[in-house]
Each structure stands twice: as structure tokens, then as C-alpha cells.
Image 1 (cartoon, rainbow, N blue to C red):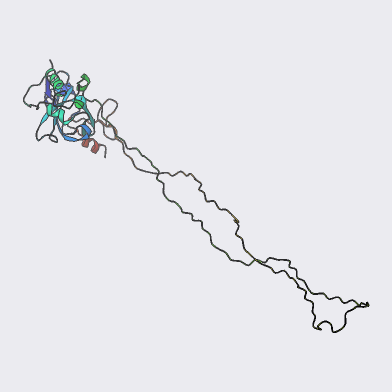
Image 2 (cartoon, rainbow, N blue to C red):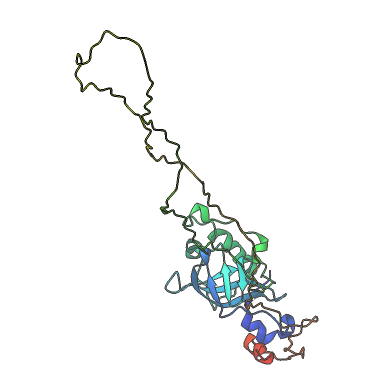
Length: 282
């Protein structure tokens, strides 16, 4: 039955077992389900025979006033200086035993304790977990982040077209043919006898003839002279956008050695990320 010892202890006594580039999560910020901040990583427990990290010591001060617990390392997702326990809930942590810094833990014993804590009656049914062997494998990969450009298009008003109408007055000449009647008197000499006598009829006898004439009457009618339709056409153009982005790269060579910006190997036991950045001139 393998024993579990603190990472800081094995670093001091068995450096040859774990090597110089061993990942130490101590001091990183811890987050639970829904990325809720719960506290800090206080350290780790490793197997005394293999040096493998099996548990992370989590200070759950964000959920409880003071409580350190052991969380299986396989539940962790490490990004930069943050450690995410995506499935870890407050009810699960409440069911866990408080970590005793002076107690000698064994892998098998704690393995059984986990199976009780994660399915305890105080844990809501939807949050209960059946632990798997893979839940104890420490993450052996770091997520390297990079920024990528995302281009969206917004519709804006680039122009406005208004079409109206107004009244234009003009004089228009129209020729009309008109007719009118004029009096025309014809006199014809006649030589025939009559019974009528002069003086029998009033001498003022007259004949009236109506003379007709055409007069122009002008009226106006409205016609549709033209139709105007206003439409839109779409033109495409390509616009080049220049933006500065960043990405993370590993500071190691092909043999796993930590190197500076020029590729020179840096041989230091206490090297930190800030040391590497300074060595690379960043």
C-alpha cells in the first residue's frame, strides 16, 4: 500500500525521483463548478514510490471559513496560474474530511474515503459522483493559449436617398379649329303679280336669322405621365484589418530543457515563469 507524502517534502528529500522540472501547483487560484472561486492550492500529495501527484490540497476558504480538503488530481484542469475543478461543488467539499497536515495518508485509505464523500447523503443526487481510476491521474498537459481575431459585420446607414415631387407650372398652346356663321344677303329681281297691297303690312316687318359660332371651352384632366421605382443594389468590398494578437509558447527545447529566447539552456532549480520571461527579454 503506497503512502502519500507532501510534494514539498519529496522535493526536499527525493529530488532524483521527480526531477527538476516537476510541476508544482502550489499557490495557484482554485475554482469550483461554474468557475466559482473557492480559494488556493496549498500543495499536493504524491505517491512515495512514483512521485505522481494524486491529490491537490485545496483551501476552500471561499466556501467555508476555514477548511482544507484533498481533491483527486484528475478532477483538475490547469490553465496558466488557475486550477479549475469543473465538477467540484460546495456540497461535495462539505462532505469531505478536513485535511490533517500531521496525518500519514495512504493512497488506498483516501481512495475509499472519496467514494463515500462524493456520494454522501448530504450531496444532492444530481451532484453525486462515482469515482473512477482516471480521476486520480494528475493532468500532464498545460493549455497554451493564443488570441485569434474574430471579425463580425455590423449594418450601418451609409447613405439615405429621398425621392419626392414638386409642381411645375408652364404655358401650353393648343390650336382649336372653330366655326361661326355670318349673314349673307342675296337679292334677286322678281317680276310677278301679287294680291298683296302696299301698306297692308307694317312697314317695320323684319326677318330674324340666328347666327351660330363655336367657342373654345378648355378643361384639364390629370394623367400618370411617369412611374419612379427606388431600389437598392449591394456592392462588395474587402477591408484589411490589422490587429496585434498574442499566443503562449513553451520555453523548452526538444529535450525538455528550459531555454531562454536564444535557445540557451537555463539550469536552475528554483526557476519560475517570471525568470524565463526575463531571460527571454520579455
